[in-house]
Length: 311
Ligand code: PEP
Ligand code: MG
Image (cartoon, rainbow, N blue to C red):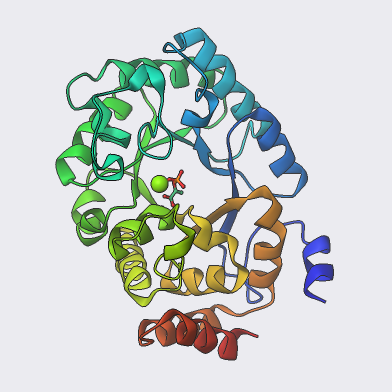
């Protein structure tokens, strides 16, 4: 029955009682964006631009970048597209943005931190987004990965606004989740990356199968940070999305909606299952489930509490 409902789902994302929650897709190129549209995703919630360049020896030119970004924008000429600036380093090393060997790359110069000494790569990428967006009905949203301070968010937002684009940041470091209200003063939206948020909250490598129980997105500590970030967004009236793997799990997606998250972005293959599950529950039940998981003390009881209410 669940698979049947998913096969019939055509969006847009909403609960059974009509509360809107955008259902978006995570992609890495134009083909992926077209596939997401086929599966009724309303837009792109995370375009991982660094994945376009993993094999490059040198920095792609602005024109090369603009062509790749334009291919994703073309799939959604009137819809939302959130372009993430290069998340270089750690699990996604880029040769042209390389830096000295580090003992702990996940805690090193990655994401927005590559701009600390030289903002050139970021400035050229933003210029490429502007070039790609020429002719779009909606200016793309642009967000930075691995923000850990308010100052980083403020300076990124200024660079993005100067080009007429809409700035946001990812919340994937616990420090940023705890400072979400202050960060949201400077940016127009945030998107929670639960993969890294779990890794850094639980001090467990997201790539380690052996530590997978720690990085389970149902960990109550991680969910409390997600809930606090969503609450900050509600207070300020600004969108808060989730684009980590948590958003791809239909039951957890409903819990996130209950926290007040305004969009969910998942792999295209998960979009219809998430949309169908949302359409089968009321917002009141999502909120009850959200409250229940916040008082759970481990992932298994959090999951069970949510399932008891939502299934
Ligand atoms: C995340 O960390 O949850 C995220 C969406 O970004 P990535 O998986 O690309 O690090
Ligand atoms: Mg991440």
